[in-house]
Amino acid sequence: MPPPPPPATLGSATSAATPTATPPPPPLPLTAATSSASAAGQASLENSRFGPISPIPISPGAFAPGAVDALPHDSKRVLAGVLAILLGFVGVHKFVLGYREAGAVMLLVTFIGGLCTSGLSILAAWVVGVIEGIVYLSKSDSEFVREYQVGRREWF
Image (cartoon, rainbow, N blue to C red; front, side):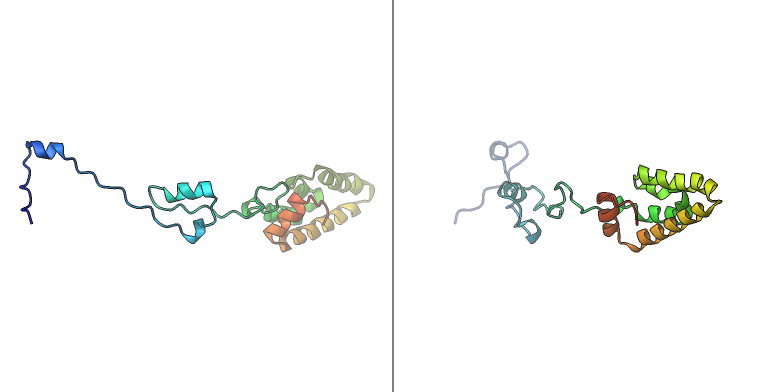
């Protein structure tokens, strides 16, 4: 075996002539979370400098028209339910859900009907509001969004 070359000194010509480059590390294998990526995405996942990238899981119909996979923060269930119990006789919860016509009907029943019936219609509107508040609060967020925000069900 030949002897090893002598160590290079700072100003020597051999150290400047032979640069030492380290090869890049091999790509890491894909995980199970990324195995369902498309062929084009597969290459970008494999060639990632920092290893495999795990995509965010998205439900299959999340971007389809009329999709009902709403996030819990999209639900107005608690707000509408509490307002229906406390101020349901004037229809505030209807306006919160975007039902302007139904809210206007409850306002008219409360004020105009209250004058004509000596307050009996106010009691009826209050009962409707309490029932709707209980119904809203008894549903899960996904059921509420599907029925009242996407399905636009105005009453009960």
